[in-house]
Length: 298
Image (tube, rainbow, N blue to C red; front, side, top):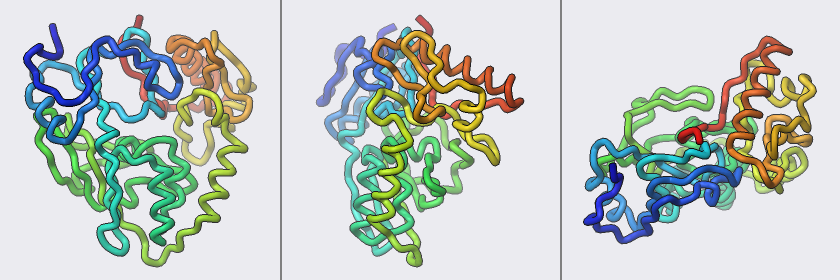
């Protein structure tokens, strides 16, 4: 079945058999059957409205929390971050951020506007859209604590404004209306909080010292279990530096798996499962993936 018809009118880039290894932070992954980069919101709406109902759609950000198996992704992968980069202050304590805005950029701009608490966004290695999708957090803050409303688009191309009450939000998990993707969020900050560039710079410096930022990874692989840290459990199981193929548990931060240069998606997935089982056997704690593993097996 063709996911995209020949007569579809698109203004953006539409590529077939696009290697996802070009787009994920792990630098691995099989091909997307179709990879669409819309030129505008109108272009995105038109494209979605013309898709067949049974065509799989995968919404893609910047690939910082994603493992794509080597069999690739059927249907259409949509990468709309280039057109969702607006960032505006709509009143003294409220910001409207497109889902393609990097979280670090959001943090820096909010500090310029004197809005806090916003520094924690600098600890999230992705975009606002990804942060919304998983309730990403860092340094004691979580995304949905700031959300006043969100704008979404469904697979028919219709746009919706939704309230936080329409979503079930937990630790690193968000469930809401099916087959919708985030376009933007309205975020409300605290008038009693003080924003500090010094605090932001301290947090960024801590990241540099404690995380393997110069090597391909996805950020944290596992969620922290209640009252503990995944990295501590993995390190206590003597897994720092353990490798399968070109994938290795970072010696700098045990909850990071790095690509030493020649890792495959299969290497990484096998190492994730090895770590998970080893921690269960050692500590009796079953770690839960924070990374999203998608696609077909080779």
